[in-house]
Image (cartoon, rainbow, N blue to C red; front, top):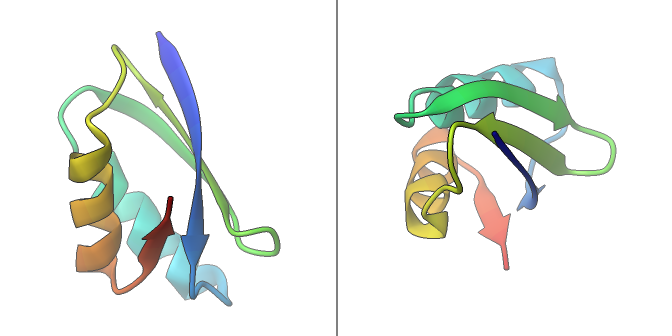
Length: 68
């Protein structure tokens, strides 16, 4: 298992967290997504390390921006 924390810009509410959780959770191999709206941190648990471009694409699809 791999756990990685990303910073996402633009989230402000529970709906934001749900959108990001749904999109990032759809990436192959992801088993859990934990979003902390207040800090902008998204912690992803997956079978193996994820391609950051896949995470970026999922966050963008949800309407937010991954901060590198």
